[in-house]
Length: 120
Image (cartoon, rainbow, N blue to C red):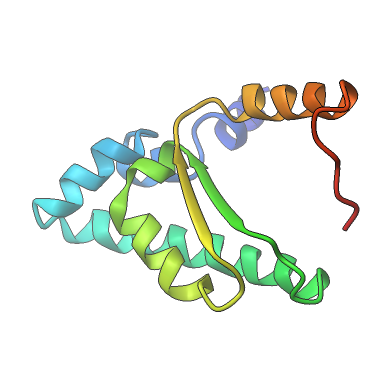
């Protein structure tokens, strides 16, 4: 149980920086905190690698890359990712913490016939 808590709630950025708030981490980085800059760049690098992997399995047929959630408030992460993946497709930034709400709303629009779904 403790191990799962460490993996699910106390891993990642919070383990390294003591916060899971990407905006707060961005402020620390802007003040020149070298450790924070290193961690944010490493995180952005990993995200860019995953986007690249998805672009490869989609054979480059990518309509857009959407950055959302808390990290979309962090310009260091967003700028790094954009630099690494802009050649794949346009990058759209949608800051916020409502990923699940957005998924549900889009699923409802598909079910109502308001939009068409795409098969990849």
